[in-house]
Amino acid sequence: MNRTDYLQAAEAHCERRGCKLTALRRQVLELVLRHQGVVKAYQVLADLQKERGVAAPPTVYRALDFLVEQGLLHRVDALNGFVVCDHFECQHESMILVCETCGKVQEVDVMAALAGLHDVADAADFTLSHQNLTLTGLCKACRI
Amino acid sequence: MNRTDYLQAAEAHCERRGCKLTALRRQVLELVLRHQGVVKAYQVLADLQKERGVAAPPTVYRALDFLVEQGLLHRVDALNGFVVCDHFECQHESMILVCETCGKVQEVDVMAALAGLHDVADAADFTLSHQNLTLTGLCKACRI
DNA sequence: TGGCGAATGTTACTGTATAACATCGCGACG
DNA sequence: CGTCGCGATGTTATACAGTAACATTCGCCA
Image (tube, rainbow over all chains, first blue to last red; front, side):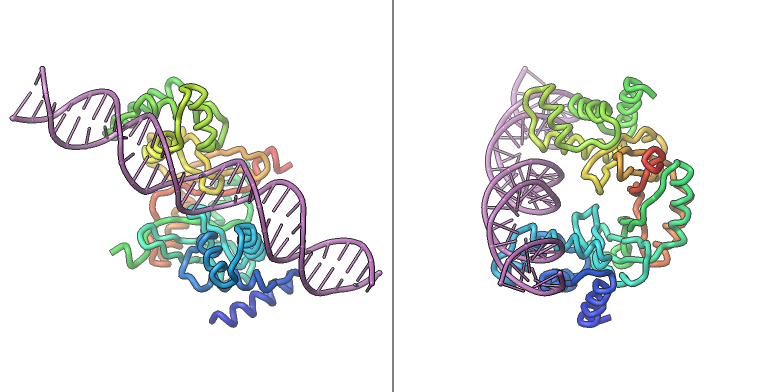
């Protein structure tokens, strides 16, 4: 899916969910899309300042929070960063793989494997929320 | 395992790994042990300052990093915090369950379930590091 | 057209973490 | 015994991450 199609789909997605992908939110989403992999909030802020002169942290954080809420982005706790989710349509749980060496990020679906985790959690009397796992390791290129 | 035994075991553990649980590191570990569940670095810093008058962030962070490296603590990314690991002896991967409501933390072993995750990662040409998963959800008490 | 609510702007601050350099303490080794 | 090296700790300053609180704007619709 190219960038234009993605943005259009994202807009429709928000519409369906009863909220709006405003100009600002769209701009922030575009800025995130321009990067490979994980982006930091302050990187987005800097980019935004380049495009519109002024912008303060809350501006960016509010937009990012919104996009995460809509499932368009995932937050990567381990890196204090954000990655685009390119399959926000399907209700899913996914696994985000972050390469320790090159920082590249990929997202894979993981329903089956998660079932096992849910079992373990159940055994500990714990109910898991829907969530996205972030795991670190080595990607194909860096493993060599 | 009570606190004294734990500290002694921790010291032996470091020894075996060829490094030292110095007085400072031991003190920081004790401070973490005094709390239930997750502790923040700046909480430890404040405690440390109460005990020894002065202390700066790097002092605490260096000690915490060391303890994490030795497997005595786990870092909980999602909370910017740290929890004691009470089974640092066995080479293990574990799953840290954080209750969204009360903040309580428990750690469970999870070898079996992880095998599934490794399979999924392999399929994506990705080699997972040994790591501790942090998952959020609701604990028994808060689920009611 | 006026008023309501959501979105955004603005200021200031709190919390998290690390860089860079100084100093200390202790064991190895001549 | 000195001193060299090195790991641990102290110190200062600053970078990076996130939010509270309040002001303002904008679109919608009664």
